[in-house]
Amino acid sequence: MQPVDCRACGARVLVEKKSPPHTSVQWTAAAGAACGEIAPRVAAGEPGARIRHCGALRASIEWAVAEGLVRIENPE
Image: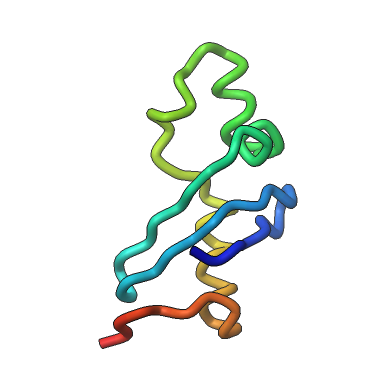
């Protein structure tokens, strides 16, 4: 797993890419609390584990892959 910081809020998560379409994200409580998309939903009572993704983080991961900061294990 490789660290990625969200370019919008700075939340740090761990990311694993086994192929171009496959992305696993490991959130920490601190990252969830810092996320501008997830934190308000959790504060409103939605379980954090059920929130599927954050658009800003997804864009940050795509940027990190394009910049070579996150490696894809099986790029084919």
